[in-house]
Structure formats: C-alpha cells, structure tokens
Image (cartoon, rainbow over all chains, first blue to last red; front, side, top):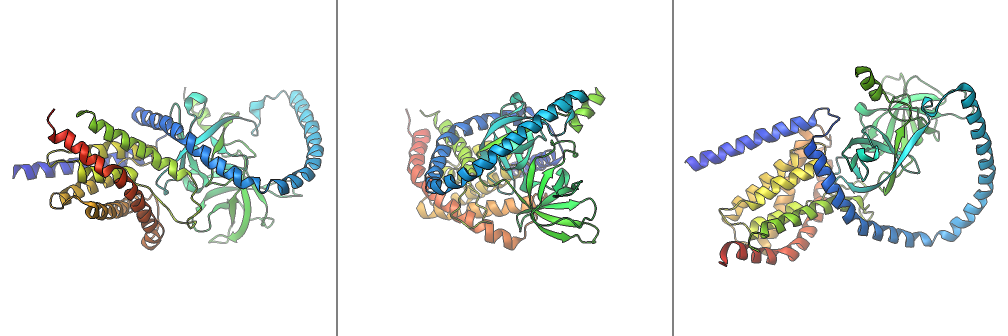
Length: 292
Length: 179
C-alpha cells in the first residue's frame, strides 16, 4: 500500500517539475542559463567532430554530380566575365567617390546602415524536431556572435541568431519567423525614386513563401521584384537580400497588399553561413547604454 | 568492467543524440518534400536497454532517459520538458509491459512500433497545447507519423542487430556474474 502511494507521489512531483520547466522555458528570455550554455557547447563540440567526415562525404558526392555540368557552366561564365570587368570598374569608381564624399561629410562607417562586419561560421547540426526551424553554428559569444544578428549565405538572408553560448549559437531560420520577429524590408522598384517599404510578417507553410505586408497600398508592386532588408527595424543592416516576389494579393480588408516572397537562399541545404554584425548600434544596445 | 557498463550505455546514448542532429542536416531528397522525418535513436536504444538489460529493481533506462532527453530538449528545441516527459513516460509504460512479456525479437519490434508511435503522438499533442505548431491531425499522421514511424523502425532494426546481444551479455556481467 505504502509502495503504491510513494510511486504516485513521485509521479505527481515530476509532473509538477515538468510543467514548471515548460513554463520557465516558454517565457520570453534573451539569456540562457549557465547549464544550457554548458550543454550547448559540449554537445556542439562533439557535433563538430562527428560532422567532419559526414560533411566531407556529402560534399564529395555533390562535387561528382557537379562535374558533369562543368563544361556548360564554363561557357556561360566566360561570357558573363566580360560584363563583370565593366561592372568592377564602375564599382571601383563609385566606391572611391563614396569614400571621398564620406570624408567631406566627416562621417564614420558606423553612421551608415549598410555597413557591417561579417563572422564566418559552419553549420554543425539541425534541430531534430522539424517543428523547430533551428540550426546550430560553431561560433558563439567568444567570436562576437550575439542574439538577434542577421545570418546570411552567399545567396541571401537565412535567419537570425536566436541565442548564443560561448562557443556555439542557435539560428532561427526564416521559415520559423512569426509576428514577434518581423523584418523591416524595402522592395526594390526599377525607375522609381523611393522604394516600397513593408514588413515580413511570417511564413506560409503550405506555399513555402514568406509573407510581406506593405505599409500602404501601392500599385507598383508586382511579380519579379526583389526584397531587401531596410535596416529600419533596428537590428539588421540595410541591403541584405531576402527574396523575390512571386505573387501579390489584397489582404483581408483590402487596405494593403500581401505579397508572397520566395526566399533567395536555400533554407534546406546549409553548410557555411555568415553572421552579420551591424556597425551602427542596434536598438537593444542603445537601450542598454541609456540604462547604464 | 562491472561498474563501467552504465557509463558505456550513457556514451552510446550521447552519440546517438548527436547523430540525430547530424542526420537531419543531410537533405534527404529521396522522399517527398513535405514529409517530416524525426529520428528517435536514443529512445530506441533505451527501449532495448529496458527489454534486455534492466532488472526489476534497477532504473537505468529511466534515469538515462531523463538525462539525455533533457539534452535533446535543450539542444534541439526551445521548450524544455516535452521530450523528457514523453520519452520517460513511454519508457515507464514499456517497463511495466516487460514485467509480463518475454524478451524476444518480435516483442522488441512490437515495443519499438508502440514506443515510437506513442511518443510522437504525445509530442504532437504537447506542442499543440503550447502553440508550437498548428497542424491538423490529418496532416500530422499523413506527413509525419507514418514516415517517422517507418524510418525509426528501420533504424530500430539496425540498433537491435548491433546491441541486443551485447546488452544481454552486459546484463549478465553486471548483475549475475560474481567476480
């Protein structure tokens, strides 16, 4: 009899502890506890070791696959190389001009929304539960990675740093974004003086597109336009490519339009990423400075 | 040797937890696009520990399940506690079953299927309650439950082949051999 009671007692206590733990981890928190940091780093270190041979094999297999297309790609690349030279020249001239103008205005790098430092990182694991759109990277606060920094690949933005331990960090991918972490964006319109501004408000699981909500109704929005971060959200720098518009709809109340944006970067296949550290102080940093 | 065996089992669990994350990184393009395949390797291994290693008075599988599912929760998810609850509860149920059932291959596979399906459904409902996802039940069983079930059954077969005999041997060394 006593034994039965004891078992029930243990069961109830563990239930209470688990509900407490879930409640604790569900609330909004920016810093992890020391235990979590420790586990993240230990597991991350071993994951990095395990990942070496596996990623070697997969890249090798991909390389073999790519060799077949090399000749055709080479022809195409040769033709675009000519255009590149022209562009490079223009680019050099323009950056020289910009530097001169900066000097005359006496502004430093951190006064521009575009400027950022980049931190190279490798992906070491992905969340095993696919409802969490998270990946783990092998750089942490020791390398300068802080929560809320943007993460990109060569093709475009893939997400933001969710939390960082000393040697590893977790990245929330774009397809896990919801209304609590919106991105302020600009839509690039050709032949127009001002860009269309709006917010990425979430991700549509069915069509696998990001949802872009405009600040005001705009007729110029159309398919094929590119979406960039505007830097006005206070966290990301300006000019990170996010995606291409594939569909425009009116919203429920016909007040604004909602556009479906296809992410430029491939969110499924990630090996090497770049963490973006904005030079201009972010909103959080300014608040902290104000408090101290 | 005798005292090393629990640590050996713990190390195997740790490696399996890490493999779960590494394998989900590899894009498996063989399958349909919207299939969600979730591996429960560590849990499968602990099922076989319960069946072949555990004695009535010991609680190795339950203790290891609490420790390593906590690691799974911290490393792979935002919410701490869901995997701890699901894995440990189902392992306890299997433990109760094994008091009356024999340990053989068929029972082990039956327990694998039962364990994987119950945990996955439990995880689905728990995450549904705390609003991690808003999927419908039809979408869930069609796109996640069946693919994950089949995948874990195959993985379970491999883990069984690799460890079932060894676990019996370790159990003998640990509890019965006097040296």
